[in-house]
Length: 462
Image 1 (tube, helix red, strand yellow):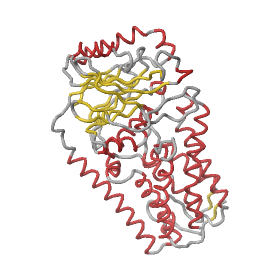
Image 2 (cartoon, one colour):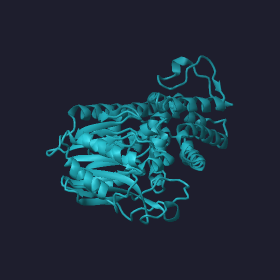
Image 3 (spheres, helix red, strand yellow):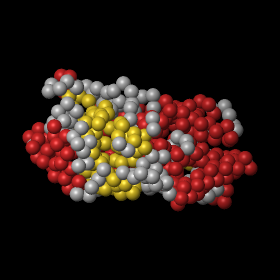
Image 4 (tube, helix red, strand yellow):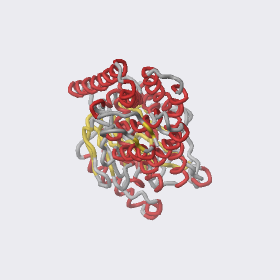
């Protein structure tokens, strides 16, 4: 049982998340359930971001309880995030049970570590300022450590997704600092009823001003708009919506080739400079057996960028020798202009080996350097940032999340591309086999976006 001193509703500041008359005795499990429910309400498709933003206050109430054992509070927080990440990442069950369990436990442990460190650093302090500063400073540290592992930091960004105005913080500092501001604000509100001093009130005012100022600045940035490209490229994004089933692909190679040709010719009628196909298991090897795409580039009179999974050893089984993810660019005369091999594989416990390049590189094109992001690479900011440093004028994310189109995974993958565009201040084209495909400007706005599980061709100028 968590015990608090008698507080009347007149002493409760607006937004403290505690509403009652008379003495308050709230069980620790009630706070846990409240926080869990609020976090889950923030998940797609509800996207009630305000709920997930205030969900941290009950957890800080647990940690600040004088009667609750810290180990019990930590255990309940771990339980909260096991439930949250278990439900939030249920789409992994379509892929691999062992990965689902590992990601759920690891992600919950990282957030629990945050609260554990907070308690360890502040356990002997009575200073509200020190506690609030610790709550703020610790959060960006954890995603930084996570980036040293194969796990994406999207797991720790998702609870803080909200209006696009707030996303603009990623244009000058890591997105985790928005979470840090919200966590510090939650703690300041929790501490105020106990301290009820000028200093506690001042922290609420400062953090409110920071969040309000960030929103106003982000709104002004969106109103100003992005600078148009001086030499725009007309690009056709092909979402072919071909089944992702391995058995189906094996039985229908000619149908796949026909669909690629039909859609390319349909796109070519609009005279694009570049036609982009998504990452997919094409029946032929576009890197070592380029005849099909050489012919298609000549037939359409356009450049063609295609991505595919190919065997590491030509004409050999991927189960024996592994595979690689590649993107290949063809010129209208059929020449192969260059290729890109992924440098990061998605985490998992697959018996099939994925071979990756030793370092990231951009792909040269007639319009300048292109920053290619294959499969999982757009969920980690370092590759988009490397592309920007290497002079890319455009980011192109090519993926194939078709196995998860019935889940909310494609939406969160799309939001990661929004962040990559804002972080690098570059336009981004996302092309996915079954959706979502999109054109995203450097401010993270969706200029256009496809629907899931629908054959579409989007035409973009970037």
